[in-house]
Length: 356
Image (cartoon, rainbow, N blue to C red; front, side, top):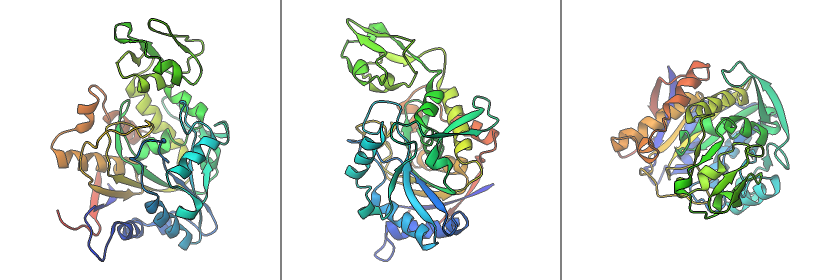
């Protein structure tokens, strides 16, 4: 049974949220994860520009400072997106990170885009997955000595939820690796729902879609990234028969296994501003639950399961299945446990909790 550490969002004059993060890192054993003079990748999501649900840079400053106190060399990192947006190349990505407050001045460590200028800097990592045999991991993450994975826990329209596993699995993949995870789910057009608004055509990264009276997809060009599904407000785009949310969830778990292979890692998840959708949107919908707290542990499966349990326990129902009917988050956790990435059973230990 894995040990998971938790603090709520209640504070006192002597113990604010930043000090709580320090306490969590100490209790969770940060000193056992990082080593003097070694490179530590702090993996996070900088937030798509316009989405305000990302983790505040103040927290990252505390985490980076604690790593530096142990003599290690941290840097902030994420890999470029497959879809067209404000983070699909390193120039736009770093600009977006800066606009959202992730700068050398504010956080005290540099930003490194893990898969390079155009998302092609990758290292093959071999695993024995059901779907993936050779994962394409962004080079700066693959070459780092250890990982500190800082995740914003939220819902997700294709996998049910997005937490530590998705952050390290999908988020550590190069653009080709992201395509590999999405590629079975090539979309289909539900013509009766299409209003020819053109959003899918405008946001298709490869130009595979044209819109006249309805949208049309050229499957010779389509890479199956699912961006058109995310951008359509009318339900006119859906995943095709070639792939399912279940297979995507399982591929994410296998990529998470590859990204963390041979590395000590610590996982920190913030259960606040829990939007129903992924932070890759350029907007964020209102939270589905009040801010709950912060979870830290060495086991990403246990950390994600604890986050889910805390949310459902607070509400008395599952807001993720309610927001995305038919999409189950259970596949990702079950498969991650099956392939040896962690376990769903855990013991929750409270740290500096006040109030309820």
